[in-house]
Length: 345
Image 1 (cartoon, one colour):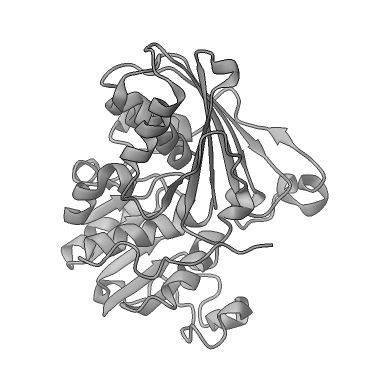
Image 2 (cartoon, helix red, strand yellow):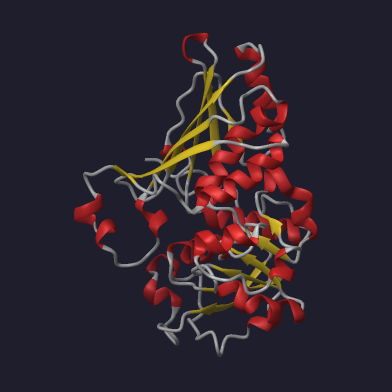
């Protein structure tokens, strides 16, 4: 059994990790930290876990994290890099759901996250945790930087086109929408029900923290400079993410050829569903699952390709993807514990 610790077990990604890992056949939940809720049974805070998780929260100072095989950090940026060195020295693997180990460009990290990087030497060995595009590196990694939710949709959505070299990589557009849970489990006016409900708005239009992470990876695929306009929006729903991606074709390719690029690339991917050309995937078709669905459109058979991507921002966009990485790091089938059918209605 894999002994698992979770640092930051009271947020949305933390409880999502608990939900998934509590029924994982190869996992033993060993430690769950919360400084504020030290001593409180997890099931008292999250009644959905009654009978599934019998642990109590413990303060980070008292949690026996070095006795774990792997520790997930479901914490704000900066926490994982402060503790990673001690855990790695004890033979513990680290999966960070924040941004500490996502960006290889330290200057970009410090610019966007307004803090110095605490362990640049460890950053160099960190694997980026988007399994479909980086599987072999994840298998061998001691540290994984879990991708952001928006970057997951953008990278998987653009990847077949960029790798095939059939689009203008300098003029990409990503129009993305996320449920309110993407903002985290904290008290803020903008995410109060009376503020976010019955409302729709863009944010971060002049710059969003997920932009440099996405550009770094898309540039690797394109083998050159990428230009991306990324506009995130907040939608009045709890879970779900819908990204509408636009790219201009530079090579003559018919609709069947476009569809084949996606079907070939994702043919053996258990968590990427390439739908029939012209489909309209819905966010509810992925709710509470690790599935991501993609559909292609080509308006008027012109030179613009429209890629629709949906996922659950808390599962494939965060905790489920992290468990997918853990499975690979410990030699398990990557689908283990993750074959939940989406919840409908």
